[in-house]
Length: 160
Image 1 (cartoon, rainbow, N blue to C red):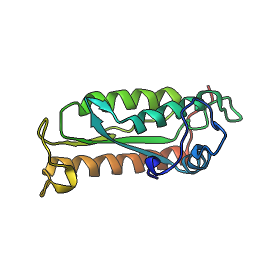
Image 2 (cartoon, rainbow, N blue to C red):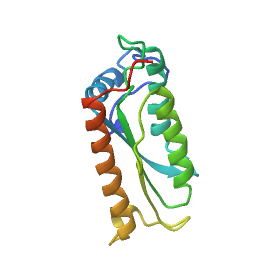
Image 3 (cartoon, helix red, strand yellow):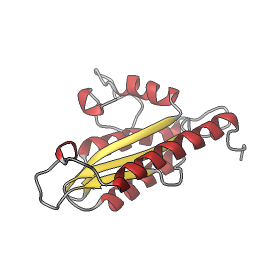
Image 4 (spheres, rainbow, N blue to C red):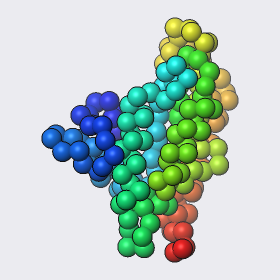
């Protein structure tokens, strides 16, 4: 789901009313085993749309299952970052912490990124052949996320 294509309102609730399209996106997220957050880097930070999603995920702290855990507890999340400047580790760390705060599980190697030359004008989709490391890292993130999601679907975390 490309959140930028939807009318998602700012706020920290599950439904901000007045045509907010987050509730429909949220239902799809809750039905999935894996959440992938992909964001460009803007001025060393996650894009504003990514921050909007993290803001909306804040509502999940008060949405609980029958055991009192957040509804996303035990779901897996991975992060992808692209951009024309450095900062992928910072962006990944910022997004990972927010996802972990609301209950997502991050797999080993759960991030991938590609950054072009700082202040450059080449985008990922125009960069030609990609480094083998980017492809291998993306494949590892996907494989580890699928593996962990299967484990958690088959045997959820114990009740605290």
